[in-house]
Length: 307
Image (cartoon, rainbow, N blue to C red):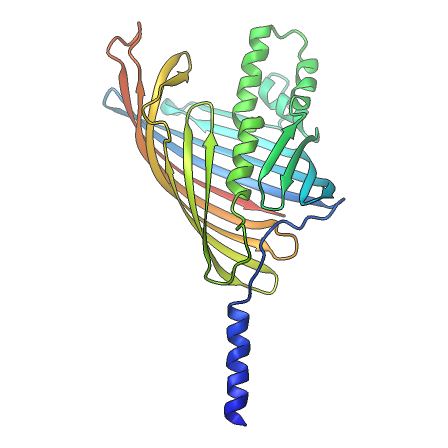
């Protein structure tokens, strides 16, 4: 009898250990979900044998309202609640913008404030894949109405500043980096899976190979860790950068830890650390007849919470 009971208990616990779990989004229509993001980044460049260090910080709170859920696709209205960024340049110069700042002379901060609570739309499937984004220009319309005297060139520069950190491409990159981790099939504790994606920006594109592990299953959360390899997919290809042509050859790693709500599949906590290293090569031009190669190192940390 004792052996029989022991066998039953062992079988029970083994079954629990290897139970299959389908980790995916299970969002509720009408429900509001939130993300608070904080990112710090240090960029070290060697220019004419002189090291230059740039420190950046970006913070924001975003709310996601599920307006419809059908056939595994969610319609979601997205709105920024707070936005801020700070850049510390070489020589002690600091540039900061904040949506909560009420300084009429600070055009960018006023613009960020006008972007708050202006929803745009996205579609996302249960695997966290971003299917489409629309109505993003709605964010900028009120900005230009606030400053009717801006010249077309001034409007272009202002929009470029905003889009670099908070525009459609930046939002798409942030969402895919955070949400494109869901496994395609049911898994158990200790399971591993791979997700590949591309991070595209105005300055460089990066191919990301993500390797995830389901470390723990608690009463209310899935605990996941990840190790990612980042590489320049087109290292030998020049692309326009600030009026010049440059190519990047950069590689590095990202380590991530996440806690996922079991019921909704929403990310409750996430922390990632990134280290990149490589070179940026500028093509020869009138200003640089021999071209230029700049060694670069990038390190950063991003944290996300849902409350």
